[in-house]
Length: 250
Image (cartoon, rainbow, N blue to C red; front, top):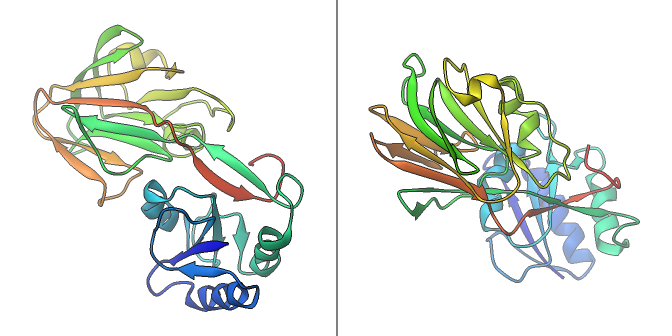
């Protein structure tokens, strides 16, 4: 098998070295580059490290948290990663390890797709949170004028993160729907609560002056918005395949 092994610079290096030694001792190939055709990827760090890389990885991902980061998606840690990696190398799927399919969202601005995919959420907001945002929202063919601090389109796993703090009810990890919720809604249909979408796209026509659309809270995955820009958000056809060790993600 061939493995991608990635880590955050200056963090988790000793675990990375141990992972590489184990792979080589078991006759497995490895690379630190994101390449197509690999069998598994091992990401060492916190959720932010995985969010940085997952959009370009097309194989199942095992996350290892060295111990000082938020790591919901990291299914192994500094205490058990050797045992978890051996389960992956020599175990049987659906018995010794599991692969969860996690929904991702794709976003475009004026028809131009953003490079990164969202594993948690897409945030459409003004540059300054102190200013109210005005936008036309279209969900399921119905349009409404919204005034709020931001609009969040979120995945089932993302429903437990930023969207939940904005008042959205968590979606089950196996849900086929994604949600849309407003941050501090002043008026509009989202003032009555979040909306769910199983298919199609959410369209947001930005009506304020300066704004931005941001993927998973990363400054690396951000695009500026101007008055009249249209953001479209929908499900990406390929989920993230995350390695875990329980029948259900939780």
